Image 1 (cartoon, each protein chain N blue to C red):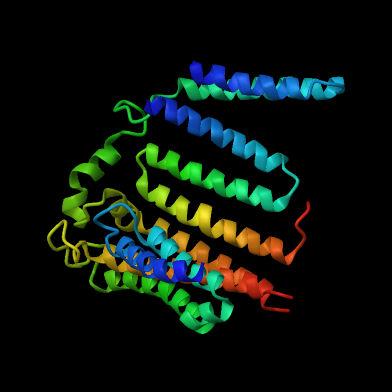
Image 2: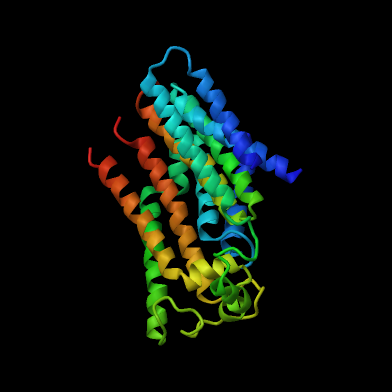
Length: 136
Length: 112
Length: 79
């Protein structure tokens, strides 16, 4: 179990990051990729023990990442207002669209997808840690 | 219609399984439930087929997304361009719901 | 063929849902619920919604089952 999870975990994490980063190109996006990434972190905590999982991503890091995800989402919307568009506008606010089909294209969509992915992954990890530790 | 028939078979077997020694009230309740399920499945069977071009959801809004989505947002994945660009405020609401949920879990579990 | 597969999947889904409602052992109910989520993911894939299928397979089958098993391990197993 430990050997298998140690072998499989990097592939799951790379797949999660791929799903997040290619959210505007292929099926997937922030929610799916974040769920896959968070599930890989839970797999570490399950197959070894809770301390090994906490060593990967501590409570404080998880809560900072979680609040940072929502804040990044909000601030990306505010940047659009600063550059003279509606809230959460993409092209009208001057985000670089780029060539459709490339990795770094689609302006604000990629940024927001990354923030949502970070947020969902840390949410899942925090939820799991809190329920497992909980009240004894 | 074949779906309705299959569903009715499932209901009938369930019904016959519970038929031994039950009250009249229970049987009437099961009849009522079966009638409601039959009506619902009849409504489902009357709905337009999946993916047909003349169902009511396929009006000018998704046509606009399909035609101008790539040029307006730069995202090849139309689903992503809808949920993060056109309907980004909705996604912000989802993120807020997640945040509030995790805050509630921490508030209930950590207070002890 | 695809039609038959869809009908079989939906029937299995209904059986899983009824089983979750009727079974008395909570751990078995959680395992049945996870198989419900897996079949639901395949059905989403059949309905050509692969992103929803991905979310369902990761969240509905993996994480929700884990959280419910964690909750059972904190409380009682019998209903």
